[in-house]
Length: 347
Image (cartoon, rainbow, N blue to C red; front, side, top):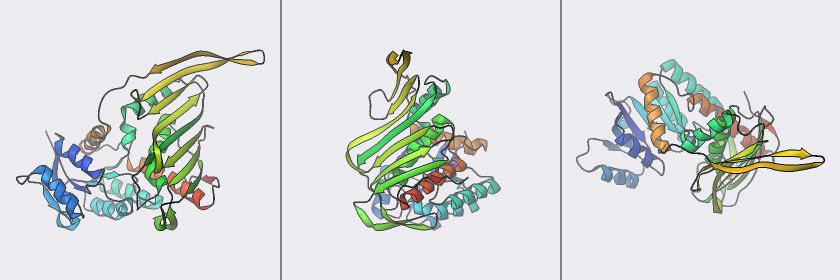
Protein backbone atom coordinates (compact mmCIF):
# COMPACT_ATOMS: atom_id res chain seq x y z
CA UNK A 1 0.00 0.00 0.00
CA UNK A 2 1.37 3.41 -1.03
CA UNK A 3 1.79 5.84 1.87
CA UNK A 4 1.73 9.62 1.49
CA UNK A 5 4.69 11.11 3.32
CA UNK A 6 3.80 14.32 5.13
CA UNK A 7 4.85 17.00 7.59
CA UNK A 8 2.55 18.69 10.11
CA UNK A 9 3.07 22.38 10.92
CA UNK A 10 1.58 23.34 14.29
CA UNK A 11 0.66 21.08 17.22
CA UNK A 12 -1.65 23.34 19.18
CA UNK A 13 -5.22 22.59 20.25
CA UNK A 14 -6.22 21.17 16.84
CA UNK A 15 -2.83 20.25 15.43
CA UNK A 16 -2.25 17.55 18.05
CA UNK A 17 -5.42 15.78 16.85
CA UNK A 18 -4.09 15.91 13.29
CA UNK A 19 -0.82 14.38 14.50
CA UNK A 20 -2.75 11.55 16.16
CA UNK A 21 -4.87 10.81 13.09
CA UNK A 22 -2.18 11.04 10.43
CA UNK A 23 0.47 9.20 12.47
CA UNK A 24 -1.93 6.26 12.92
CA UNK A 25 -3.33 6.26 9.39
CA UNK A 26 -2.34 3.23 7.27
CA UNK A 27 -2.05 5.38 4.12
CA UNK A 28 0.13 8.10 5.66
CA UNK A 29 3.69 8.32 6.92
CA UNK A 30 4.53 11.18 9.26
CA UNK A 31 8.00 12.45 8.38
CA UNK A 32 8.19 15.64 10.45
CA UNK A 33 6.46 17.83 13.01
CA UNK A 34 7.15 21.58 13.05
CA UNK A 35 6.18 23.69 16.08
CA UNK A 36 7.71 27.03 17.11
CA UNK A 37 6.70 26.57 20.77
CA UNK A 38 9.43 24.40 22.34
CA UNK A 39 7.17 23.11 25.14
CA UNK A 40 4.48 21.94 22.71
CA UNK A 41 7.11 20.38 20.48
CA UNK A 42 8.67 18.54 23.43
CA UNK A 43 5.26 17.23 24.52
CA UNK A 44 4.60 15.94 21.02
CA UNK A 45 8.04 14.31 20.82
CA UNK A 46 7.43 12.59 24.16
CA UNK A 47 4.28 10.92 22.79
CA UNK A 48 6.33 9.20 20.08
CA UNK A 49 9.25 8.12 22.25
CA UNK A 50 13.01 8.37 21.79
CA UNK A 51 13.17 5.67 19.10
CA UNK A 52 10.82 7.49 16.74
CA UNK A 53 12.12 8.33 13.26
CA UNK A 54 9.89 11.42 13.04
CA UNK A 55 11.80 14.70 12.72
CA UNK A 56 10.81 17.28 15.37
CA UNK A 57 11.86 20.85 14.63
CA UNK A 58 10.96 24.44 15.48
CA UNK A 59 11.82 25.70 11.99
CA UNK A 60 9.98 24.90 8.74
CA UNK A 61 13.12 25.82 6.80
CA UNK A 62 14.95 22.75 8.12
CA UNK A 63 12.57 20.28 6.44
CA UNK A 64 10.87 22.29 3.67
CA UNK A 65 12.99 20.58 0.99
CA UNK A 66 13.06 17.10 2.48
CA UNK A 67 13.56 14.74 -0.51
CA UNK A 68 10.76 12.37 0.55
CA UNK A 69 8.15 14.96 1.53
CA UNK A 70 4.90 14.87 -0.50
CA UNK A 71 2.28 16.74 1.52
CA UNK A 72 2.13 19.46 4.17
CA UNK A 73 -0.53 19.73 6.88
CA UNK A 74 -0.92 23.29 8.18
CA UNK A 75 -2.45 23.92 11.61
CA UNK A 76 -0.92 27.31 12.38
CA UNK A 77 -2.68 30.66 13.01
CA UNK A 78 -4.80 31.86 10.08
CA UNK A 79 -2.61 34.91 9.53
CA UNK A 80 0.32 32.61 8.61
CA UNK A 81 -1.55 30.42 6.12
CA UNK A 82 -0.97 32.35 2.90
CA UNK A 83 2.82 32.48 3.07
CA UNK A 84 3.19 28.87 4.24
CA UNK A 85 0.74 27.43 1.70
CA UNK A 86 2.23 29.43 -1.16
CA UNK A 87 5.75 28.30 -0.28
CA UNK A 88 4.72 24.65 0.05
CA UNK A 89 2.76 24.66 -3.22
CA UNK A 90 5.68 26.22 -5.09
CA UNK A 91 7.85 23.40 -3.75
CA UNK A 92 5.39 20.90 -5.23
CA UNK A 93 3.61 19.65 -2.10
CA UNK A 94 -0.05 18.77 -1.64
CA UNK A 95 -1.72 20.91 1.04
CA UNK A 96 -4.08 20.11 3.91
CA UNK A 97 -4.85 23.30 5.85
CA UNK A 98 -6.91 24.19 8.88
CA UNK A 99 -9.73 26.67 8.20
CA UNK A 100 -9.96 29.44 7.14
CA UNK A 101 -7.86 29.02 4.00
CA UNK A 102 -6.60 32.61 4.49
CA UNK A 103 -8.07 35.90 5.71
CA UNK A 104 -8.27 37.39 2.20
CA UNK A 105 -10.42 36.15 -0.73
CA UNK A 106 -7.85 37.33 -3.27
CA UNK A 107 -5.10 35.37 -1.52
CA UNK A 108 -7.41 32.33 -1.52
CA UNK A 109 -7.98 32.67 -5.26
CA UNK A 110 -4.24 32.93 -5.90
CA UNK A 111 -3.57 29.77 -3.90
CA UNK A 112 -6.31 27.82 -5.71
CA UNK A 113 -4.88 28.84 -9.08
CA UNK A 114 -1.35 28.02 -7.94
CA UNK A 115 -2.47 24.56 -6.79
CA UNK A 116 -4.10 23.95 -10.17
CA UNK A 117 -0.99 25.11 -12.04
CA UNK A 118 1.20 22.90 -9.87
CA UNK A 119 -1.25 20.00 -10.26
CA UNK A 120 -1.42 19.61 -6.50
CA UNK A 121 -4.35 19.16 -4.16
CA UNK A 122 -5.44 22.05 -1.90
CA UNK A 123 -7.75 20.70 0.79
CA UNK A 124 -9.31 22.78 3.61
CA UNK A 125 -10.18 21.09 6.90
CA UNK A 126 -13.87 21.96 7.27
CA UNK A 127 -14.38 19.05 9.65
CA UNK A 128 -18.10 19.60 10.18
CA UNK A 129 -18.76 18.86 6.50
CA UNK A 130 -17.61 15.29 7.22
CA UNK A 131 -19.66 14.88 10.40
CA UNK A 132 -22.15 11.98 10.10
CA UNK A 133 -24.93 14.28 11.36
CA UNK A 134 -24.22 16.83 8.63
CA UNK A 135 -24.13 14.11 5.98
CA UNK A 136 -27.37 12.65 7.37
CA UNK A 137 -28.97 16.09 7.45
CA UNK A 138 -28.10 16.74 3.83
CA UNK A 139 -29.86 13.52 2.86
CA UNK A 140 -33.00 14.57 4.76
CA UNK A 141 -33.04 17.99 3.06
CA UNK A 142 -32.32 16.54 -0.38
CA UNK A 143 -35.23 14.10 -0.04
CA UNK A 144 -37.62 17.02 0.43
CA UNK A 145 -38.78 15.78 3.83
CA UNK A 146 -38.96 19.34 5.23
CA UNK A 147 -41.03 20.64 2.32
CA UNK A 148 -40.44 24.24 1.28
CA UNK A 149 -37.53 25.64 3.28
CA UNK A 150 -38.25 28.92 5.06
CA UNK A 151 -35.38 29.84 7.40
CA UNK A 152 -32.70 28.51 9.71
CA UNK A 153 -30.90 29.48 12.88
CA UNK A 154 -27.83 28.42 14.83
CA UNK A 155 -26.01 29.06 18.09
CA UNK A 156 -22.32 28.43 18.72
CA UNK A 157 -21.44 29.67 22.21
CA UNK A 158 -19.08 28.65 25.00
CA UNK A 159 -16.71 30.09 27.61
CA UNK A 160 -13.45 29.87 25.59
CA UNK A 161 -11.26 29.36 23.73
CA UNK A 162 -10.55 33.06 23.19
CA UNK A 163 -8.41 33.62 20.10
CA UNK A 164 -5.81 36.38 19.71
CA UNK A 165 -5.44 36.21 15.92
CA UNK A 166 -9.09 36.34 14.78
CA UNK A 167 -12.42 37.32 16.35
CA UNK A 168 -15.43 35.16 17.21
CA UNK A 169 -16.83 35.68 13.70
CA UNK A 170 -13.79 34.22 11.93
CA UNK A 171 -13.27 31.56 14.58
CA UNK A 172 -16.84 30.24 14.85
CA UNK A 173 -19.14 31.34 12.02
CA UNK A 174 -17.38 29.36 9.31
CA UNK A 175 -18.77 26.09 10.74
CA UNK A 176 -22.43 27.10 10.58
CA UNK A 177 -22.09 28.85 7.22
CA UNK A 178 -20.46 25.73 5.78
CA UNK A 179 -23.23 23.47 7.13
CA UNK A 180 -26.05 25.70 5.85
CA UNK A 181 -24.40 25.90 2.43
CA UNK A 182 -23.93 22.12 2.35
CA UNK A 183 -27.54 21.40 3.29
CA UNK A 184 -29.07 24.06 1.03
CA UNK A 185 -26.80 23.52 -1.96
CA UNK A 186 -26.37 27.28 -2.30
CA UNK A 187 -24.34 30.11 -0.77
CA UNK A 188 -25.59 33.45 0.57
CA UNK A 189 -25.54 36.42 -1.76
CA UNK A 190 -25.98 39.08 0.96
CA UNK A 191 -25.07 39.16 4.65
CA UNK A 192 -25.40 41.31 7.77
CA UNK A 193 -23.58 41.27 11.11
CA UNK A 194 -23.40 43.20 14.37
CA UNK A 195 -21.04 42.52 17.26
CA UNK A 196 -19.56 43.54 20.59
CA UNK A 197 -16.00 43.61 21.92
CA UNK A 198 -15.31 43.22 25.64
CA UNK A 199 -12.10 41.29 26.26
CA UNK A 200 -9.52 42.47 23.71
CA UNK A 201 -10.36 45.94 22.38
CA UNK A 202 -6.64 46.70 21.95
CA UNK A 203 -5.95 43.82 19.54
CA UNK A 204 -6.34 44.17 15.77
CA UNK A 205 -6.44 41.74 12.87
CA UNK A 206 -5.96 42.22 9.15
CA UNK A 207 -8.78 41.00 6.91
CA UNK A 208 -8.65 41.49 3.12
CA UNK A 209 -5.87 44.06 3.53
CA UNK A 210 -7.91 46.09 6.05
CA UNK A 211 -7.23 46.58 9.75
CA UNK A 212 -10.08 45.56 12.05
CA UNK A 213 -9.98 47.21 15.48
CA UNK A 214 -10.71 44.96 18.45
CA UNK A 215 -11.53 41.26 18.42
CA UNK A 216 -15.29 40.85 18.80
CA UNK A 217 -16.44 38.38 21.46
CA UNK A 218 -20.11 38.37 20.39
CA UNK A 219 -21.44 38.42 16.82
CA UNK A 220 -24.96 38.15 15.40
CA UNK A 221 -25.05 37.01 11.77
CA UNK A 222 -27.78 37.07 9.12
CA UNK A 223 -27.34 35.22 5.81
CA UNK A 224 -29.58 35.80 2.77
CA UNK A 225 -29.73 33.06 0.12
CA UNK A 226 -30.90 33.39 -3.50
CA UNK A 227 -33.78 30.94 -2.92
CA UNK A 228 -35.27 33.30 -0.31
CA UNK A 229 -34.02 31.24 2.65
CA UNK A 230 -32.60 33.29 5.56
CA UNK A 231 -30.32 32.02 8.33
CA UNK A 232 -29.54 33.64 11.70
CA UNK A 233 -26.49 32.69 13.79
CA UNK A 234 -25.46 33.63 17.35
CA UNK A 235 -21.72 33.41 18.03
CA UNK A 236 -19.93 34.04 21.33
CA UNK A 237 -16.89 32.74 23.18
CA UNK A 238 -17.84 34.62 26.37
CA UNK A 239 -20.94 32.63 27.31
CA UNK A 240 -21.18 29.81 29.89
CA UNK A 241 -24.32 28.48 28.15
CA UNK A 242 -22.52 26.15 25.76
CA UNK A 243 -24.47 25.56 22.55
CA UNK A 244 -23.65 23.80 19.30
CA UNK A 245 -27.05 23.80 17.62
CA UNK A 246 -28.32 24.41 14.10
CA UNK A 247 -31.88 24.17 12.74
CA UNK A 248 -33.51 24.33 9.31
CA UNK A 249 -37.27 25.01 9.19
CA UNK A 250 -39.63 24.07 6.38
CA UNK A 251 -43.39 23.93 5.93
CA UNK A 252 -43.45 20.18 6.75
CA UNK A 253 -41.04 20.09 9.66
CA UNK A 254 -37.71 21.11 11.16
CA UNK A 255 -34.31 19.44 11.17
CA UNK A 256 -32.22 19.97 14.31
CA UNK A 257 -28.50 19.25 14.58
CA UNK A 258 -27.55 19.50 18.26
CA UNK A 259 -23.97 18.37 18.65
CA UNK A 260 -24.24 18.17 22.45
CA UNK A 261 -27.40 16.02 22.51
CA UNK A 262 -27.46 12.25 22.98
CA UNK A 263 -29.16 11.99 19.58
CA UNK A 264 -27.49 14.77 17.56
CA UNK A 265 -29.84 14.80 14.55
CA UNK A 266 -33.61 15.07 15.05
CA UNK A 267 -36.39 15.40 12.51
CA UNK A 268 -39.41 17.17 13.99
CA UNK A 269 -42.28 16.60 11.60
CA UNK A 270 -45.44 18.70 11.51
CA UNK A 271 -47.50 20.99 9.32
CA UNK A 272 -50.58 23.22 9.43
CA UNK A 273 -53.98 22.35 8.07
CA UNK A 274 -56.21 25.36 7.49
CA UNK A 275 -59.78 25.07 8.78
CA UNK A 276 -61.70 28.24 8.04
CA UNK A 277 -59.65 31.02 9.56
CA UNK A 278 -57.78 28.66 11.90
CA UNK A 279 -54.52 26.76 11.45
CA UNK A 280 -54.41 23.33 13.09
CA UNK A 281 -51.12 21.47 13.63
CA UNK A 282 -51.08 18.02 12.04
CA UNK A 283 -48.66 15.11 11.87
CA UNK A 284 -46.59 16.32 14.80
CA UNK A 285 -43.93 13.77 15.73
CA UNK A 286 -40.22 13.59 16.49
CA UNK A 287 -37.90 11.13 14.80
CA UNK A 288 -34.29 10.34 15.63
CA UNK A 289 -32.27 10.23 12.41
CA UNK A 290 -29.97 7.20 12.51
CA UNK A 291 -26.34 7.94 11.73
CA UNK A 292 -23.12 6.12 11.00
CA UNK A 293 -20.58 6.11 13.80
CA UNK A 294 -17.15 7.48 12.91
CA UNK A 295 -14.77 10.26 13.97
CA UNK A 296 -15.25 13.22 11.58
CA UNK A 297 -11.57 14.19 11.64
CA UNK A 298 -10.59 10.63 10.74
CA UNK A 299 -12.94 10.91 7.76
CA UNK A 300 -11.35 14.24 6.81
CA UNK A 301 -7.88 12.69 6.82
CA UNK A 302 -9.16 9.75 4.75
CA UNK A 303 -10.63 12.05 2.14
CA UNK A 304 -7.49 14.19 1.90
CA UNK A 305 -5.29 11.16 1.35
CA UNK A 306 -7.76 9.85 -1.21
CA UNK A 307 -7.63 13.19 -3.06
CA UNK A 308 -3.83 13.05 -3.12
CA UNK A 309 -3.60 9.43 -4.22
CA UNK A 310 -6.28 9.72 -6.92
CA UNK A 311 -5.30 13.27 -7.96
CA UNK A 312 -8.92 14.38 -7.57
CA UNK A 313 -10.09 17.62 -5.85
CA UNK A 314 -12.58 17.27 -3.02
CA UNK A 315 -16.13 18.31 -4.04
CA UNK A 316 -16.87 19.05 -0.36
CA UNK A 317 -13.77 20.79 0.98
CA UNK A 318 -11.54 21.99 -1.85
CA UNK A 319 -9.64 25.26 -1.89
CA UNK A 320 -12.45 26.79 -3.95
CA UNK A 321 -15.02 25.81 -1.30
CA UNK A 322 -12.75 27.41 1.31
CA UNK A 323 -12.47 30.53 -0.86
CA UNK A 324 -16.24 30.93 -1.03
CA UNK A 325 -16.47 30.77 2.77
CA UNK A 326 -13.74 33.41 3.14
CA UNK A 327 -15.66 35.69 0.75
CA UNK A 328 -18.71 35.37 3.01
CA UNK A 329 -16.71 36.07 6.18
CA UNK A 330 -15.09 39.09 4.54
CA UNK A 331 -18.50 40.51 3.63
CA UNK A 332 -19.69 39.91 7.21
CA UNK A 333 -16.64 41.78 8.52
CA UNK A 334 -17.49 44.75 6.29
CA UNK A 335 -21.03 44.66 7.67
CA UNK A 336 -19.62 44.73 11.22
CA UNK A 337 -17.47 47.73 10.32
CA UNK A 338 -20.49 49.60 8.93
CA UNK A 339 -22.76 48.95 11.91
CA UNK A 340 -24.75 46.08 10.43
CA UNK A 341 -25.37 47.20 6.84
CA UNK A 342 -26.47 44.56 4.34
CA UNK A 343 -23.40 43.69 2.26
CA UNK A 344 -23.32 41.72 -1.01
CA UNK A 345 -20.99 38.72 -1.18
CA UNK A 346 -18.56 39.31 -4.02
CA UNK A 347 -18.61 36.77 -6.83
